[in-house]
Structures are given as C-alpha cells and as structure tokens.
Length: 393
Image (cartoon, rainbow, N blue to C red; front, side, top):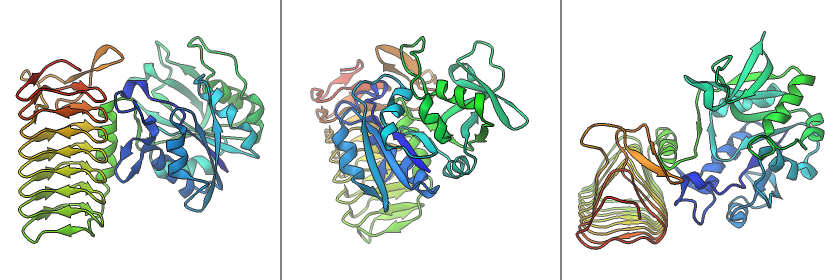
C-alpha cells in the first residue's frame, strides 16, 4: 500500500501561524502535525509515502527527506490549490497498485489507519452530533452506499473523516469535474469507487481536523496527554516535577521551577528559576521561560521567549516570539462566554471558555503589556510597554 499524504496547503484559517510555514508542519508535541499522519501510515504498513507539496514545499522536503523511518518518500508538486482530487492526481505518476489518501493536517486514531489499510477499499468515518458541515456517508449492511456533501437534512450522523484506501482502478477516476465550490473533490472519486466496489466504513475512535489556531492547541493537548515521563536534560535538584513530563537532552530546568505535566520541554529549551509550567504545554526547541514566569496549557514554538514575570495561558505562539517581561495574557471573558477569534475577517466562537493569544512569528510585546482573550498578533507585530491591547494587530 502506498500512502499519499496531502501537505500542499498554506492553511489560511490558521494564520498568522502559517505565514511562513505550511499548516501541516506546525508543531504538535515532538514533531510536525503531518508527521503524526505519516507515522500512522508507516505503522499501518505503507511501503512508500508520496507527499503532495506546494506552499513552502522545501520545509516539508527538509523534514522528511528521501526516506522516513526506513520507508521511501516521493514528492508530487501541486502548483495550484485546486482541490483534493487534483492534489492526488498530481501524485498519480508515483502510484502503482492500491493507494491510501490521508490529510496531512488531520490527526487520526492510529489503530483506525491500520484497519483502513486492511479493509481496502475503505473510508474512515466519525460519528458527529451535527453532520451538516461534513460529507455524510450512508451505509447498508456494513458497506458504504452513498456520500452527500453538507446536506441540510443528513441521512446519518456518519461524517467522512478524509482518509481513504482506494483500489488501483481509482487512479483512472482522479480527473473529476469542478464542484460548485470550484474545486476538484476527492469525494467524487470516492463516489465512483462506491459505485464499483464494496467500500467498508472504518469508524474512528478519535479524529481532529486542525484548521484553526485553537485546534492546533487541541492537537497538542491530545498528543501531550500520551507522554511517558522521561528526564534526559539538566534539571536542578530544587526544581519540582510532577506528572508525565519529558525533558529532552540539551534542555535545562533551573532551580525552584515547578512543572506539572503533561509538559514537553524540547532540546535546547530553558525553564528559568521559579517559573511555573503546567497543563498540556509544549516548550519548543531553543525556547525559554524566564524567571518567575507562568506558562499554562500553551504552545511555544522554537526560539520563542516568555520573559520574566510574564503569564501566558491557553495560547499558541509562533517561532521567535518575544513576550516581554511582565506581559499578562488574559484567557477568559468576564461573562463566562466562549472566547471568540477572528478567522478570515469573521469573528467566530472557539467553543472554548479559555483561550488566550495567537502570535505569529517574530511578534514582540513590550514590558507589562496586557493582552485580552482571543487576540491575534500578526507576524512581526509589536506592542508598547504598559499597553493594553484589545484589538488584533
């Protein structure tokens, strides 16, 4: 089984985090988001990985190389983002036999990918409360008999989770007409397979489509919860560590620090004296948490610094962000309502009562800045010392 993994998209809804980094390469625990998908495919027995690349393709190539965990890796370039079927069609010249298609910006229950490969032809599905925003599968006697996109009156609550195992013949059905959205949809390929084959629905125990910043935070909460405690770095005898914590080789935890897992502190990172790190938190490579600072349930990407006496909670910080000394990130509303965040110019609910700030690469806050819940700082944005920031910038 060859596995085609789609990694070509920029991810406009997750901006500013994707301003210089493709969404599938954003950090989830100890590896990029797409690597979790590729790992699931390798564990399921894929004998080749075909990565479809486009936006910032070199970042993907640099990480995966020509082989990943001993499995050959090939690349197909999608120069135009014209839909999922179009993306897979660009990989057709690499295909020889049955093939799987997986989204590089989704997290899948790994055991289900194994079942998907074994059940080919098959499609992954997940039961949802409101399937109207999904492709909805209809089944009969354990076989998929129909798929309809975003129906007003869904026939079932079984949503298409965007993972497929196709027979070799499906290679000839990848050229599909544009949909009403102006894209070439992989679901049209699935419909052709359903017409010709008995397609098995493989139900996922857990699945996450990472499209917006708070979903990246949720992805880290999921994967960090699976940490097994390991202390390989330099930890002061007076630091207090409890729960599932990984301190990688080359990381440093200084005196008086209090760390409550699940927390991953990556190589080259530093947690300073008397700092507090708790919740599902990723401290990326070469990142730092200063003296007396607090970081809770957050993602700090590589090279980011939370300076002394600052407080960062339920936030996602891009690369080389500087949170100036004494900066305070508020993470909840006084009325207790879910925090809203602006996506593509529209304020929408995060469906989280606690959510702090999203900062793009190289953003900087002045000392004693106050940031309100659901705030967005774009790439390179700055704040003045002592400023209260209530609007995105």
